[in-house]
Amino acid sequence: MFDVVVVGGGPVGACAAALLARGAGGAALRVALLEPAPPAPLPAAAPLRTRVVALSRATERILKTAGAWSRMPPERVSAYERMRVWHESVAPDSDAVLEFDAADVGEPNLGYIAENQLLQWALLGAFAEAGGHLEPASLESLEITDAGVGILTGRGRLAARLVVGADGAESRVREAAGIAADIAGYRQTAIIATVATFRPHEATAWQRFMRDGTLAFLPLADGTSSIVWSADDELAARLVAASEGAFTAELDRASDLALGATRLLGARVSFPLQRLEAQHYCASTSAGDAARLRS
Image (cartoon, one colour):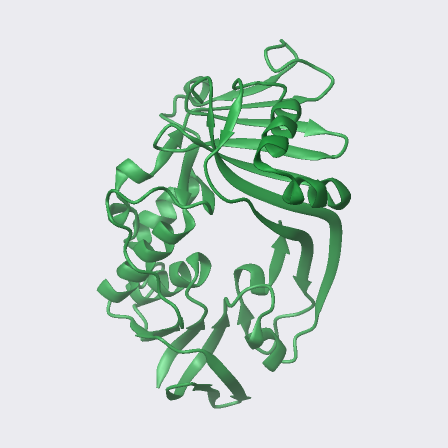
């Protein structure tokens, strides 16, 4: 019998599991974590992965408590010191640009940009180091009773006092527990890619608001940038289907050449944006996208 079984070993689930196993805020618990596809470690010379996440200073403190921060190679993590945010009606070098600078509040930086895969790998390692049990299997079914929870996996059965669903927007835990969710689309699609820019990113996150979407350049550790372009669905469909040359031309137009001309370095990835919120939590506890998703 485990105290807690966490279903879903992405960054949210793995972080929750590591904190519980380490007894953050209380006694250490016996924790199992279901993750059917744990990531392999990234070779030191491997190119940066396309999917990245922005980590705040508060998140850094949580990751240190979870034992994961020291596992993330600093050469793959990019600290950003400033943010520049502007509307399409003004130039990117205009005095009307809203700027946040870590130096203004006496901090070394505002946060970090790191690869999703690296973060997940570091958290799973921290969880194992804390004595947690990693179950490389998928959830088949749940049985929730007053005595606890029975979790049937592809490898067998686990029992726990509590199950935590951190298995994404299409959570099987949420479904099995009978927890309904409110879902609404934003009629926008996010496009992400890695690009090189003519001018250096200057350890700065850049974000431009336009009538048909929002474009962000996130600074990466190797000097390139990760773009996150949230565009109206009709525009996004054209951008995804466009040739590399046509896409970069549209990207240069949308960025107003804030960092100069861009060059696409890999494949584009896209996904629809939606809002998801669980209606209640009385049957079990859900975490991350399984409970709330506003992306």
